[in-house]
Image 1 (tube, helix red, strand yellow):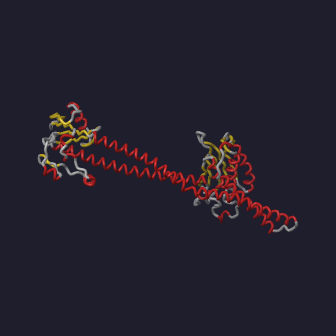
Image 2: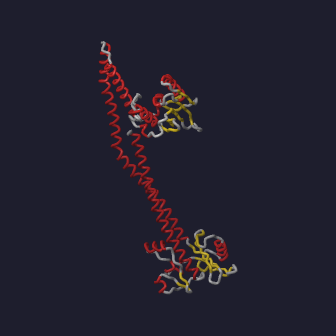
Image 3: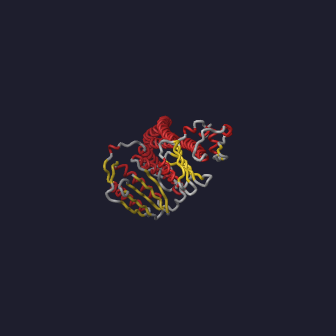
Length: 438
């Protein structure tokens, strides 16, 4: 695994950890807010219901037996049973309805408006609030009576519209600005804590992840060093073997054994060169050395060099290259990417098939696309994710007669990473396509 791949893995780990932390914290904060809102709403509803049952007038005293039994009675009426889930929450957190408190009469801020069964205004009660005038109370009452729900919120108030015993209606509006403000502060506090938690956890996770990947980075560097050193050490004995074999051939001992030796020496030399290229492709690149490079000319020139190869194999080479495509790059990198993809396409193209080379930009000309496709009828059930693995050559039985080392696409992928681009492979209707996005 290259150093860049390790860094990408580290970033994915950090992102996954942060998203998990955010989801968990948001879920916890959401549960706290919802449970608190449910209990608050239940208490408010109990309070308004009690006022409604007393026809908008709060009695000064309660029957002690009723308080102990948990049922507030007035004129033979009992407050409706509340939701069982909310009741269990209140028991769990030791929360009781506000109307049981001795301070309920003095602390409750509300106004009530009653109407006759004909719909005429009967009475306006504003003795428990100083913020609302009688005319405003009537306006509020007429507004909430038009609403679909008979119980709900309106600004910082909660209201209830109910029928009276005489057939009329009563509207009770309770000032819940304190409870609403508490809920808002709770939401704000939760957001602040989640934000701070994200910042702190991001710092801790980043430091932790950096320490974890250090051994992997060191291991990747050792692998690069080993490949480079091994390639240098192998070049000398291979050169000696090749020279000795050539000498034997010159002395008249040219036979199938010397020819086989020369082929294997050439193969090993090519393999060593490709391993070095893989290592260099994964190394960091100096952006300062990049120059404006004519992408169009490079791809056309590279494709032209492969025309005799395609023709000798009985394959067709088709070009669809836009003019004037250029970018800041190293000419050698672009030429090598094009060479690797075109060589791969011709090598694995079906007999008498077609190889298509395309080059262009998107509509905004922000990205450059290099596409190389070839006929590949047997590619429907192929695992394309493995194409960029080093030394992977697909179906060995199908490719045994094709020369290569299985590292070309890996080299191309490493070069694409230098330009923060990506290379993808797709198959459709018997055509396999490699797409490079710069």
